[in-house]
Length: 129
Image 1 (cartoon, rainbow, N blue to C red):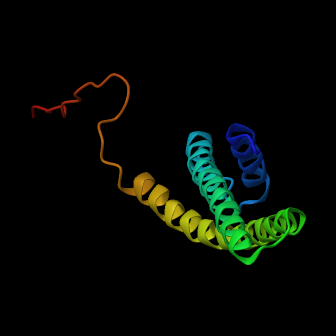
Image 2 (image 1 turned 180 degrees about the vertical axis):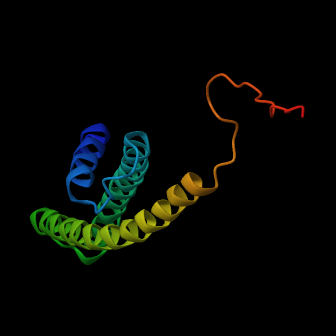
């Protein structure tokens, strides 16, 4: 069985090196993005792995397929899942990266929050003639 934490860590490592995240993203935004989507991907893969096993086992039992053939079919279906998930997720995340990049740019340009640090009021100097 696959350990969910190990799978998530492996996915996060791949995302960190292979996703086209712009280098100008703040480190915390990059880490949060990778963590969120690696977690989602791991959950999806583990859920689908279980579902594949259940579907193939049920079908094999009704079709009187041997245990070895059932195991081979499950392994094959899981490989297909990983191949499809890899390409689909890469495409989906590229779109999400573009969206997040636009959001980060907008925050940088339009952030009207209070400035950090001490504030002081500067009064104009009046000259008397």
